Length: 171
Image 1: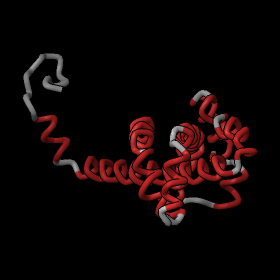
Image 2 (image 1 turned 135 degrees about the horizontal axis):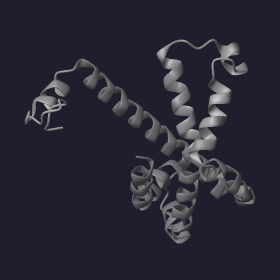
Image 3 (image 1 turned 120 degrees about the horizontal axis):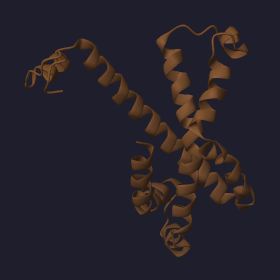
């Protein structure tokens, strides 16, 4: 990046970076990427935590966690072929919905991200929920905390390391 593209090597310094930072498409793509990451990671964490709570509360459903992990174990190349078949120009889904705007493209990328990663987040959250001592939640209930207060004041602070690891994984 510090050399020009000509046959003769010429030091150009930071001119390439100046050109990059003055390009409007760079800032637009950076904004779209950050927006995508914030929305996709946030919603994936929320869905993962909610589904993990349901699975944790209804222990007989916990074997379903294996089914949620199937997209994680599929190679990305297989997923791209599957999603291309579903979202390609001649697919039944595209012909049914007629997507042509940017929101549809953003939504389809988001759904792929969610489908691929929510199972891992659910598994991580389940491990974190199993690591919380039930006596802490019981004591909070005895002190008069509602279910919502138990979640916000006890569970989420105790899950902060799991949430941080999930965010790093999703990046």
